[in-house]
Amino acid sequence: MFGRLRAWDGRHPVLVDLLRMSPFLILIGLSILAYLTFPGANGSWSHILLSVLLALPLPFARRHPRTGFAIVAAISGLQWLTMGEVLMANISVVILMYQVASHRPLRWAVAAGLITVLGLMLITRWPQDLGDGSFVTLLFMCAAIWISGIYANTRRRYLEGLEERAERAERERDQQARIAAAEERARIARELHDVVAHNVSVIVVQADGACYAIDSDPEEARRAIQAISATGRRALAEMRSLVGVLRQDEDPRTGEEYTPQPGLAELDAMVAQVRSWGLPVETKISGTPVELPEGQQLAVYRIIQEALTNTFKHGGPGTRAWVELTYGPHEIGIRVVDDGRGAAAPFEQGGHGLVGMRERVAMYGGSLTTGPCPGGGYQVVARLPVASAGSRVA
Image (cartoon, rainbow, N blue to C red; front, side, top):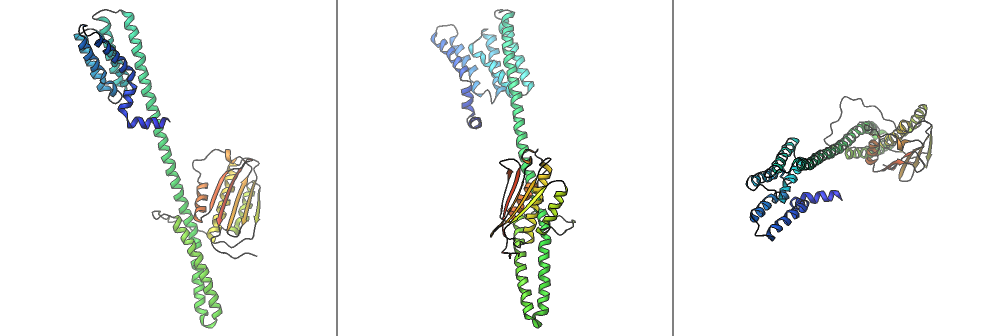
């Protein structure tokens, strides 16, 4: 609601300022009406003209407080020199003093306050001496209004600073997320490098064997060509995934050693290592296992590894974890759940484990769900479609 009001204020500043000053304008208008009611009073038309001139800067007080204050102060000074009396419209001096204090730096607020105090001294001492009591009363009133303007100025600048810092923090957060995603893509590219290189090496070996056996053993050559076809399709699928994930403007990191990456065959060893850390883990495999491409095996391995690592880091003492791997006809399901306090653990600014899991799942067109369990603990649930029609493992 307040956001819409601020937006409307920005679109119609003159109307908003006019509405804000309407009580004072009505008060000045009533004084002008009083002068018009008694047209025979001495100098009534000069009073009306001065009242109008003093009221004109009020609708523009917020946008041009210094100019408005200078105008009303100069008019009031000439009024004191020529007429020696105070009008209801002279309240505009105090109003503009407040606007200067609330919208301009402190030096201008001090200058406006001193000029207002000087005006109070003049009108309370001449043409008639109103006494020290009147001067002190008016001084305290103006001081309270001036301090209110300083407070409003300080609070507004403080809130603007908070909004600026919040916007900067949001931009930095988005930037860190993009950097984390870029780093994860680069790491996935390095991991897939070995997978693709292995497939190409197999194709070369099979092609050489087919060339040697094409005359002496046509059947062996036919099997080699079939192996080349299957390996080529698998390598092409991996390349499509790689090109879909990586951006063209990413610079590959050179000078880093490429090492073979783990797959589902190393899953038991990884779970045993986690158990050696002191985290009890139970595994369950449902369905009939299928042969998955090396890249997809790596994705499953890394998702389980990251989920168990997070459980160990954030679950707290006495935490247990369960890993479920479900093979379906068209997809493979991964579920890692624990009974710890992972949902209530402090958030780490530098952690990008969930970002990495999302990148891996998105690369294969799967889905990822993370969050606290209804009865406590934390769970990571991922589903990956089978990348290629692998044969069933007996």
